[in-house]
Length: 303
Image (cartoon, rainbow, N blue to C red; front, side, top):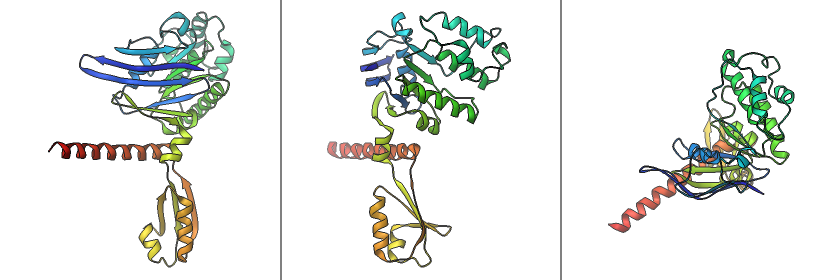
């Protein structure tokens, strides 16, 4: 089931093109990380899902409805990057006010427990730290029992334990059939929460796939070992630093097989996989190379 979609969506601010023919579908049970450099169009896309901005062309839908309409808004939860609460209100009062707007809200006591607000529930938010305010914002996001949550830098200000707790909660939400869209600068958070990556650059989708597929396609394995007497095969195919020989390989089995076949001595062999951040970096490097080669070819053709 598709819960949110962009169909050939473009957005112009005067002469500035924020989104250009963006196509994106978010399905039930997906946790989608929306990635891209600053100015890529991520914030514009999220604002459209909330009905805060309208596309210049194309169509945006949530549950088959126009974003911002009451029927659509009752089915989503949002945590914006910045939080601003009435300073005199307490978390419990904020939750009471918010849940009153939904037909089947979550239990206030359960939300207070889930987000570690037990000792803060009766205190005015004006006295809260940034991390404490963020926990209140996350609790409010889930107050209406949403089917889709939109999270813009959700764990900014949280301590490591708070980030871990939220990742576990988000995973349960998705496993139960919820859908989630997040932006984050924390790669570990993305890898712990998301199961799908969509990358936007210059307003267009340039990557769309599961984390598993992306790591499989662009990720490399890091091979390292020691050698008491490295021969020509090791010296020609590996680099040495502080007594450790190493190389990155997309075909680690073949690389190790060739090492063994060379007959050159080695020990302490280790093979580790690149993480998501490293895989994305490889993709970006490959894409930049492809773009540069196309520009060179185009320039040569016009001369």
